[in-house]
Length: 225
Image (cartoon, helix red, strand yellow):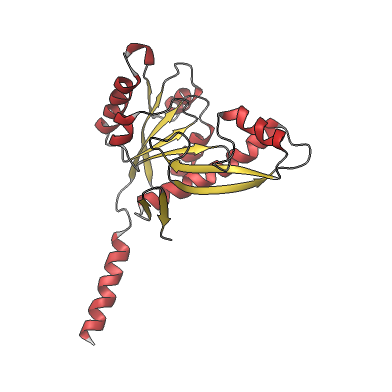
């Protein structure tokens, strides 16, 4: 009887121990408007997400994501690639900035630079990138992806959230969400649909990560819900 009770208590302790007891610290890399970033900010402010965004970093001085960060009291950093001799040197500085701010999870939201080994090694399985298609189909960038989807005439598109690794747009897939491609769909209307799916997926993944419910085994991700 005592052994059974001990096993039950141990099981409960292990389960509860998977949950984060503090706010998870996020860092965001963005090169464009940061529409999905706003969804994260709104969820935090609404008390739906127990997190803090330490900073938003961009390789583009005019990225609206930086203005979005400033207007919400978040540190906005423009890190100019022109000031570095190589991609590796740039990414070393990028990783240093995030580590100085004790960032636990990095979100790539419309970030248009492929990350090199110094950054990947520093944040392996801790950097999530959102892509506007159901990978491995339709790799590419932003509007071009949606245009390719429409040109192919497929009935479904969606988004893929994956951990960044050495293979561009081919890291371990965390979550995917499908959207229907309607008759008469345009690039802009499809983008809007996909962005809605992206925001759902990102928020869900942050919560899962914060609770220790995501496990990476090679190229495979296991989620414990």
